[in-house]
Length: 209
Length: 209
DNA sequence: TGACGTGCGGAACGTGTGTTCAGTACCTTA
DNA sequence: TAAGGTACTGAACACACGTTCCGCACGTCA
Image 1 (tube, rainbow over the protein chains, first blue to last red):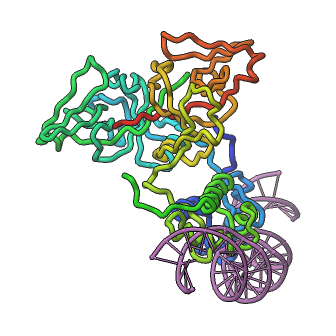
Image 2 (tube, rainbow over the protein chains, first blue to last red):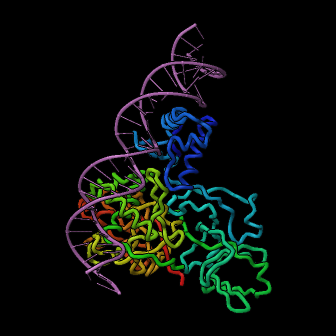
Image 3 (cartoon, rainbow over the protein chains, first blue to last red):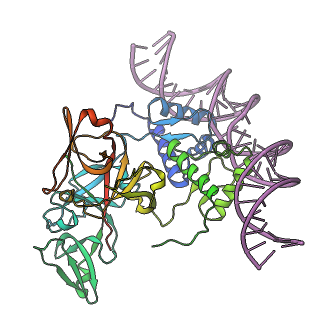
């Protein structure tokens, strides 16, 4: 759960590892020793190899012997990713400010892929219960200013962040709860400037134990 | 929304592409031409190269010239991934057989990451409705033979696949619905061989339109 | 009938690539 | 004081690797 202890990396070794990750992200496959050396300002492949041996020995990198580009950075804590948890939705304060980061939740990469534009909120209330979003659930929100009709969005309505379904209806927008005990919220197109769509709900997570 | 048209792949070309993806998933880096040929039963690197050229020409693969292992499969529709949809759960037939693939659903990679051991099922019935799993929902199941107590699993019970919460209770196992109108299913430890856990539910998706 | 795509085998070429060895310099720990 | 880790240069080696050209067989399409 908490990942085994690994020896600390030197600054230079961290640079090497960071560049391997960046190269893979950019190209889709790992770099060669000479490509690493070229970027890091190391002219000898042996200099690069020394770093790779150190990374391997300290447990940050897996290599396959004598195979080209066989560099696989090792992720800690299995496949968990930290996502900023910004606060309870429907709270009055501006929730997107960095200062309001309450915590980070670790989520299986399964749910997030590489998307960095995702944050988490904890749902307060039962206004979306018919969509299976319960009180206390975490919702994962992909930041984007637009949504398609019918999508569940997080929107900024009347100085409050709230989660509702989004239905544009000509000169007004209907924000529809999924609970018969709640009434829809209507916002006129004029006031739409103040009613920003913060993002769309892309995942729901419920603690199971 | 629907991605540009791409020429259809031949069966053989699809095999090549599938193996490239599988190799990357398994190793963390792409294969060489000879590794591809070895697995596909093609002794000549030229035979493999012909396939790669075809995949590149048809828009399924990006390559960098003359660089080793520079094979990057191209995902369509931005971040969408195809997951095999194996059938309706609670149906009587063995659902994991390849022949029962009904279709593939495209899911945002957000939900899946790189995991290839995930398949989708469509839920039939309302036995898990209190967990927000509704009739017609797609559930994403990570294949694994074990589960932690309380997790929602897909299990093979009495010649049927079903989704329930998993509660081992000493000499028996309770499979618990999330609906007061349904009774739990008890399976003795003796019969556990026939009651295989197929996987755990890692995601729920509901069509929003 | 001829052109084109598919699906290979076989061989040769040139260079990309990881490995290894020898050596230097600096620093920290025992 | 010796040993080991860090951080490289430089050179040489062997083979892994992508490329290219030749060939064959089979199919479809106009």
